[in-house]
Length: 381
Ligand code: GLA
Image (cartoon, rainbow, N blue to C red; front, side, top):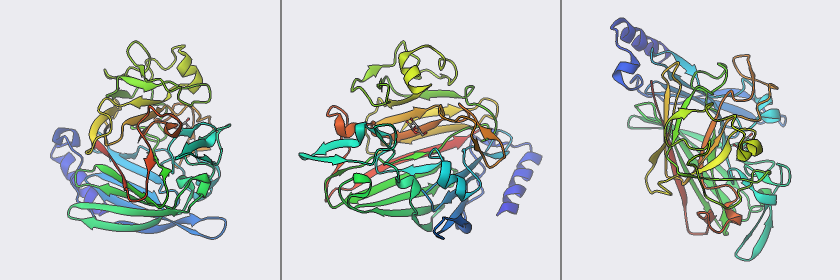
């Protein structure tokens, strides 16, 4: 496959045909995902890496945290590079990962003081971010081992990831059976379908925490990336990054990405919300709201390589985090250190702290219901 892929690229280049001209990634066709040993946890548990390829996109996924360890896409000349931050060894993922590429659950982003009340009953969650609970608590879905099963379906290839979170895990009620499907389509799209069921009323908000840098994971900051977000409002936060409950207009603020602008254009404006976040770390209220089918909500483009990411989702919110806490203490697989702004996250989700915010779309899941959300990442150059 490696060989045939290179042959396709070489052939296309020789014929003067580029990926940019065809408007899509190379149609190399999918093949069965390949499993290899990535490393072992301290208790001896083996962690596997699954490699998938389709339509010019190459994905490597770990059984630990469902982590996207590498995601390679072509630039306008057909040159592939890894556009997602990560590590080349399991030890760093276990000891120091700021959720690089991980699946996030049971609840993406923060729940104030790690507390909420549901049907009159109070719950105390694992608190791991000051006084708040972040991304599911101290051992969220990013730190558990997922059962992975590969599939090929027509021209799609992918992985089913299963994890059952027991009643009371991290303080959450109900046994939550979770299934996440990663699909690479023939046009190189990466699609994520999340599903969950519970045996007691609970709250759920699953997402994916890929750190994007479309110029490559060790290429410097993302401040020149161009971004648009189809949202007229966002949820301002307090100093602990918990939403105040207000849905504020983006008009006239640094948070206005309705018209494409670079990530860096307003990031140093002395706006109170940017001071709280040390940059952008906010939830956008998507104009389309929750939808049955994924709808386009954001486009990210690196002008230097031409690589473009379009995101479509069924979810009502998008957390845009500009890599503010990267502080030069982590080393990526290419051997470079990661510094502030070296990547950004676009996490499709329900709004942070929804269990404590009656006016936000509900994140409650009850027995008999199935939680279902979908996010599609489309790439072009
Ligand atoms: C999310 C949060 C950020 C930060 C990162 C991980 O995007 O909103 O505040 O915690 O995850 O470092």
